[in-house]
Length: 260
Image (cartoon, rainbow, N blue to C red):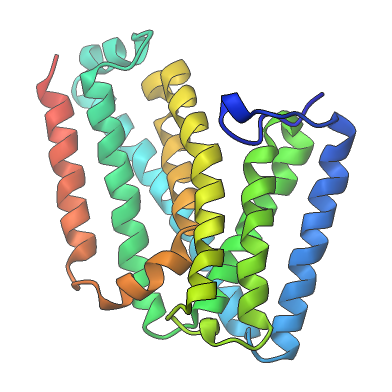
């Protein structure tokens, strides 16, 4: 059996490794079908979809590169202290503060960018762009690390009902959610958290500070699955939300530096 757990360990279930590629292709086919239907029914636009796809990828890459840059600057500024943190078998209090710092940084960039995007683009285009990036992650994981492909497969599958709801003529192509739309968006977000939170925690405990750049990118992907739930709130959020999260990131980072 392969494919990894599909829920928390006490509900874990495996599936044959031979299912990994067919399941990935099946989910990919459904996603492409929904996007084609959305374009034909004018629930999606080619320009908005391309922009949403590129923007999400750029946000994930930007956060990852900034995290790497900050960490490299830190190793040059205080090499002995950073080497000690990297050598720690288990994350220290400083490590958890650094993790909180980079998580806040990821959320700051995401909220700053998407708050502005939601003012001029439809939620359906932006979320379909997020899902195309998840599909890319699924295909890469399927061929590179099939045992971890479940992290992309099941959240993507859980997100398809919401996308279907937006392209089949409901009003949730806008930035507001009806009750059924909210329930479907909540399904995608819940499945994502159930799978990714235990994985990220174990990954951080196993790899410590040396894996921050991967964690920062993963946080962007997980946050992307919450875009439908966050969109109504982001549309009304204060203009300085991103700046406030960035300040929180700096405070967490300073707290980590202040501890030995």
